[in-house]
Length: 264
Image (cartoon, rainbow, N blue to C red; front, top):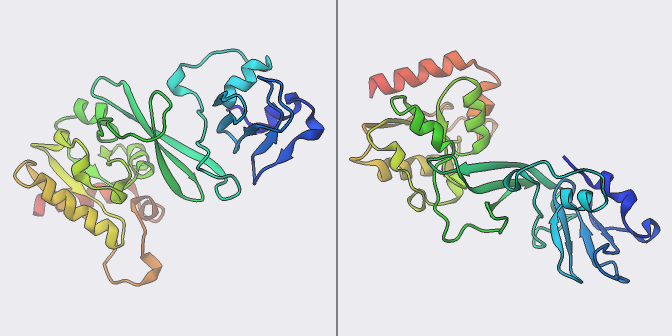
C-alpha cells in the first residue's frame, strides 16, 4: 500500500508542509500554481484532495504522478480518497475495507472501517454513499456456490472472514445491526437453514429478531445461537463470535451449530 511516507518527500516545498491531525498533511498542490496549501494528503493509506483545483484521488495516483510507482491495479482494487467529512485528528484513517459483489462477482460497493471504529459505504465508482445501489449480502458468490450448506449470519464482515478461516459459510448485511435488514436483498437465504450468531448485546439480539421476521415462511429454518449466556454481566457484553473463538475451537463452534439446527 502506498502511504503518506512515500509521498512526503515529493511534495512541493517540503518545508511548507503542515501536519493536519494524526496522519494527514496540508501541502502545496502539484497540479496547479498553489500558494495556500490547498492539498490535503492522508490520513495514512487513504488519498488526497485539493480544495483549490478540485483534483482528488488515491495516494497511488500521487505516487504515479511523481513517478514513484507505475499503474498496475484495477480501479476497484485501489485505495480511494476518504471524504473531507472524515476529519483527520478525529479518525486515524482507514483500517479495512470489505467488498460486496453481485451474483457474478462484480463489485457493487465497499463497507469501509475507520479508526476509531466507524463505518462508511463507498460505491464501486469511488463515490461515497450507496443510496440507490442494490444492497446484497456479504460473500454472496460463495453463498450461491455453496447453496446446500447451512448459512451463519453474523453482524460484521470481520466475523465472516474469521468463520471462513474455520471453513464455516457465513455472511452479514451492510452495516450489520446498525441498519435495517429489510433494506438488503436476502433472497439468497430463502429455502435454507440459517443460524444467526448475534453479538452479546441488545442490538445483537434485535438484529437476530429482525432476521427471524424477514425470513419467516421463506427460509427452511432460522435459529439464533447465543454463544454467551445473557445476563452474565459487563465482562461479556458486546462480545462476538470472533471473541468467542479466541477461547474455543472451530470444531466446538461447528458442534454447537449442529446441535442448534438439529434440535430446533
